Amino acid sequence: MCAVLFFLYFCVKILTQFNNLKVMSKKLTFCIVCLFCLSFSLSAQEKTKPFSHLGVGLGVSTAGITLDVASPLNDYFVLRTGISAFPYTYSNKFDVGYDFKEIDDFINANPTVKAELTARGLPTTTANFDKSVDMDAKLGLFNGKILIDFYPFKNSGFFLSAGAYIGKDKLVSVKGSLPEESSKIVDILNQHSDEFKNSIVIGDYTIDAVEGAVDASIKINKVKPYVGLGYGRTVSKKRTIGFQFELGTMFHGTPKIASSNSEVQKTLNKELESEGFIKIMEKIIIYPVISFKITGKIF
Image (cartoon, rainbow, N blue to C red):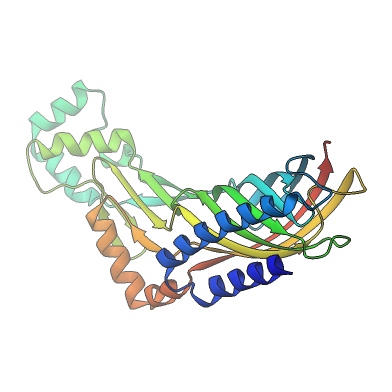
């Protein structure tokens, strides 16, 4: 009964203090250690000994494809570790931000530039330029996890879970590069004039590219405290094969827009703030985790 009250108190404290993630992370770590020690102190009185069985779980969730490995600490607590990954990439094309008429006029007015382009095997007219830029967006949901599952009833699959997901700090990352040929042409033009810039047109904005590339990302915390509940045992007491359903929340912190390109950073901040997205993002500090797994007992 003491273990039940302790665990419930811990979960309530996590849910009521999620606005202060640093304090919460320290409390979470402390509570996990306490739960781990408590489970071992109780194991001498239980039939199930620590690490006497091993189970695995494979499934899908909102955090991606999930693989878990679990072992009981006693009749009430199970130590569960695993990984989850959501491999998703989205690609799109954007226009390069060149004034093509200005470039053509400059090349035609400068025979030296035209001769240098010809000598390097590069086009001398923008009609032959590659005018599109490939942009790739990747979802950065790749995490390891360490959790303690608490089963308050010996003969039931209902459980409460607490722990942390640890992984990438970029929820979404976007990268794009200018066509190599076009970038070389502009570099040659800039040896004779400083009027030309490598840039990409995105919507109503023209963004300068640093060394021919642009990037941006939505950053979150690497360590993400987690609480949840579910039904089913990763280490089944009676069956070799079973199922497990879980509903929980990762506390990933306040998302932040970041870029190594100051022009991109400035444009994103201006656009997102004007649309009210930044205020909305400041309130989205959690990520819901819903998972369904097939579990198997190894021994």
